Amino acid sequence: RWALIFGGWSTDLDEEEVLGKARKLVADLSLDIDLGKAFMPGKQKGFLIVPLQPRTGEDRAKLQRRAIASVQIIRKVALPTGGTDKSGRPAKLRLAISKSPEQRRRTRQMSKSKRAVLEGADKNARSLAVRADYKSGTLWLDARKIPRTSAATSAYGWLDVEAVSGHG
Image (cartoon, rainbow, N blue to C red; front, top):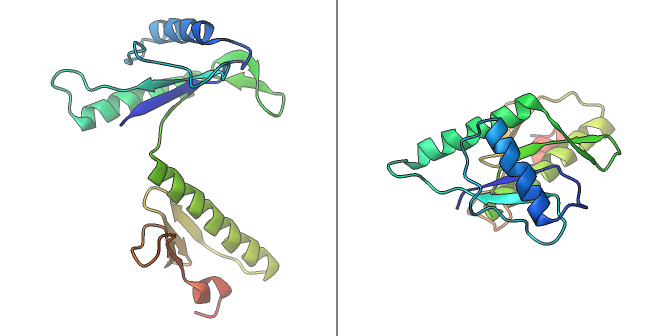
């Protein structure tokens, strides 16, 4: 199921206030999204979950393009929301396409693997070419694939320890 995460507002606002601000922005920026089924997951969270439904005759690719176009508009305008982020800077409006639990798991695992490789490189004074493909869950180290989080050999993926240690 597709959804957009629309937020950046103060956590002091209730759902109706956030929905009102979101509706105004969608109209002002001519975003091609429908807030009819949007909701705030809990009280005073500062963001909305906007379920995406395909329109009549709209396939998955068109739905995705429509969502991406809205995300790009929000990123481009970078509007302040009146709130502040965790570091105290003015918060900006955010819109993102939600990820499935599996995609979030892959991304989390990939981030941990990449961090471990880079920390090991710092300790061993190695210069590395590291490239991460978060969508597929693959990390490349000096043109060699070292982990893949979607591997069938383990529920958690695998890691090429020899390549990481520099002995492979």
